[in-house]
Amino acid sequence: MRTKSEQFEMQTPTMPILFVDDEPMSHVIIRNQLKGWNLKSAYSAEEALTILNREYIPIVITDINMPGMDGIAFLQEVRKTRGMIQVVIVTASDKIDDLISAFEAGATDFLLKPLDKKLIEESLRNIMAKLSRWKGTMKALYQKRKETNPEKIFPLD
Image (cartoon, rainbow, N blue to C red; front, side, top):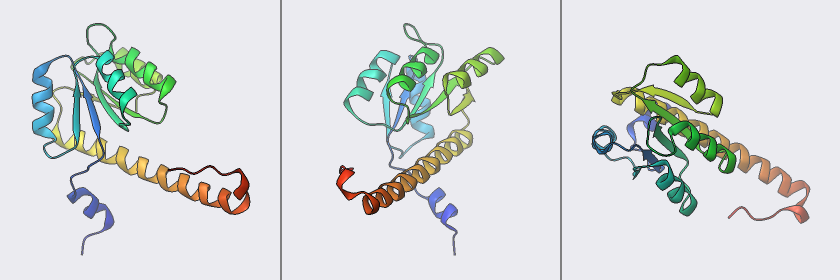
């Protein structure tokens, strides 16, 4: 019999993920590595912000080095307006300053290119588990508040 953790690992997640990178080959690689996942694409930070304004996507994977708005500036913009979105920074650069900047800006994780399939999947599954826990906590808090102050509750749906 499989544990819940093992069962979760066997499933292909359906939670949407937005991949942001100006290099078309990076999109081909990530699509091959995350075959079957609900992956959406943007080729610039500006395009990604437009997509995030249209629909809720809880996880973003973005490159740092892009023309126009770079990955760090994009991350900062996401944090200002969409604080719960989890952002994974990816880069081919091994500069420690990039790592520090990413985490100071609020990155959830930081991965080096070329992306390792197991590492990216592990990062995404950890993020999804965290989001699931948050959702459970929010539902419990909502239910408790609903029971104690029903007149001050607005529907979540």
